[in-house]
Amino acid sequence: MASTESGYATVCVAEGALRGRVSSTATGCKYYSFQGVPYARPPVGQLRFKPPQPPEPWTGTRDATKEGNVAPQLNSFTGQYVGDEDCLFLNVYTTKLPENVDSERMPVMVWIHGGSFTSGSGNADRFGADHLLPHGVVVVTVNYRLGVLGFLSTQDSVLPGNLGLKDQVAALRWVRRNIATFAGDPDNVTIFGESAGGACCHLHLFSPMTKGLFHRAILQSGAFTPLSLVIPSRERSFRLARHLELPANSSQQLLDSLMKVPARTLVENILEARSHEEKLRLDMSPFRPVLEPTDAEGGAFISEEFEDVLAKGQHSLVPVIMGVNSMEGLYQIADLRRSKEALDAFNEDLEIVLPTNSKINPQDRANVAKSMRSFYFGDKKLSEETMQQFAEMKGDLWFVYPTLRAAKKLSTTPGAKPVFLYVFDVDGRLNVYKTLLRLQQYKGACHGDELMYLFRSSKRPIDVEAGSVEAKTINRMTRLWTNFAKTGNPTPTSTDEELVATWPAFTEGAPNYLHIANSGLTVKQSPFKSRMDFLESIYK
Image (cartoon, rainbow, N blue to C red; front, top):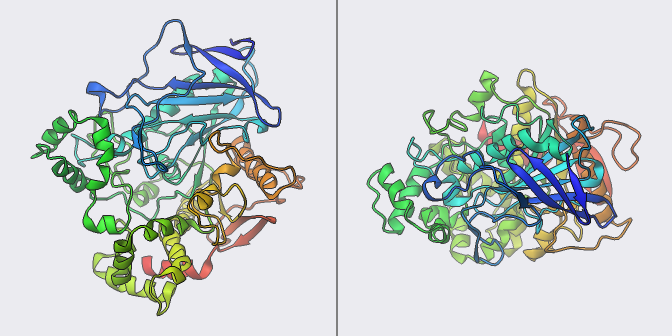
């Protein structure tokens, strides 16, 4: 049972009572927010580098009107250190609280933020739920461990890795136990995320830990396939130790040394884990998901490659939306402009742009790079004149082709559920990433530009006029996403004038996708066909 008072509401979850806030969206939709809710014990002291432990109960009523700490990180815009190791918190937003145990329950949407596995949070400065709540869903946003503390791995049982992913599993288990208290349906949970968060959602499809904890998934610019989880994480871990001058002659000695290093030191030195070539490649996430040994403490999150799990039929068979933005690679133009060394390196040897954990044979990489240079640039060099071509190539390699490949793989597996593919191509005032990077001269949607059409940022609130492209896109996106959360189908009826009559599923024989543009929604086939055909010829 829940109780309310002027401006506040109190509920009881398994761990104790929570006092949250009563608020309203800009359109007058009343909702309840419960923020800074611990879903696991603080991963501090002897629990650093350990799998998350169940949360401890508390006495009295816990204040849930303020958000919890973000994970230790460097702010992606200011470069300043922020956060605290005690960071395993989530936020819950709901438009109703149940009057009794038999009250009608709403679909649940659990947001997993991006940030290259090194930055970000689920907090309302970027991910306010105002746009989604009026559609009758419960929204949960999650903070999880990042960078060294969340993803460092020696690729053995001492430091197997994937702690940030295991934090997300703990959050989903908390949702399973407690979400009915917020009028949420624990049997109708959709996970969704963007960039690294989308990749996490993709990985949850293949993890035995998460089976049964969610029922649909939305992957925004984050499908992993065909990238491999075999990455040189151990090598990077020891490189970081050498940079910090730590004793590290074995995995255990490395762990013992890292336990004594302040979180801030680990965060501020994470990029020193990269090799020289990785620095030139502008790889900003040296620690990310890896394959774990099967004897990992608490169990392995994932220990087999995607194709192997698919072949065995051991992945979660759930409906999926996945897609990309029309100009994903624009974000790296800003990085290139700040690094003449990287620009010169790309011109000298385009091979460094190829993902090191791709399925391209090592002996073929030089020839592949030559083919790519010819295809994307012709006889021109990488310069201001050809930055758009570079952005297309980078986006294709890291986002578009992996997403298309993932759609094919998931849709053709035995017993497959529907896969819905999209391309987000809206170019408006809420494309904040392109604006922040000062790339407005380029057409299309940059990586991350769809986010403010789904969420409201308390840090950068932008007034949206009724009838504007921005208002229409918010309405279309949030209705498609919440329809999917409710039914597994983004267009369950054909009578909605704001949406296409039907967004058909993607199949290998009919590669349908929804083109989301300023002018509206259009069903098309085979996105970026000539570019994808070229990459398919390389990866085969």
